Length: 101
Image (cartoon, rainbow, N blue to C red; front, side, top):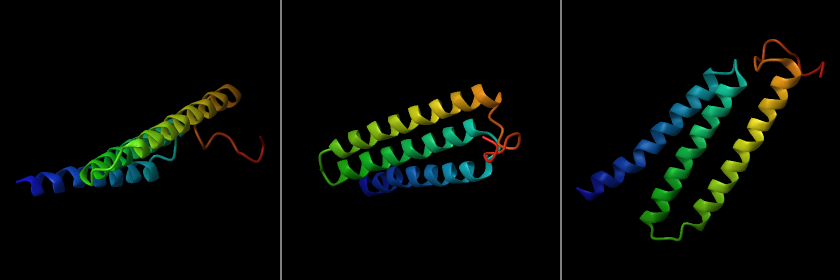
């Protein structure tokens, strides 16, 4: 029973990560959707790292460092989104060209 739960708890993050990659690849119209799917992928990788490190009885300082980097990445993405919306008015990729900026 415990091996079934261990395989179940490690399979769910892999499925979620693959769903996040599919969402990231299919929602390239808006920057906000892409940032949300990246955060979803990163949180599932964090979940998988915590499960794996607790399974092998290691300390989870690496998970906390990874979570700090994910939070910084999210803040940077939101800052870029705000500056993009302020300069161009929206977050559509089709309405502006990066060569004109």
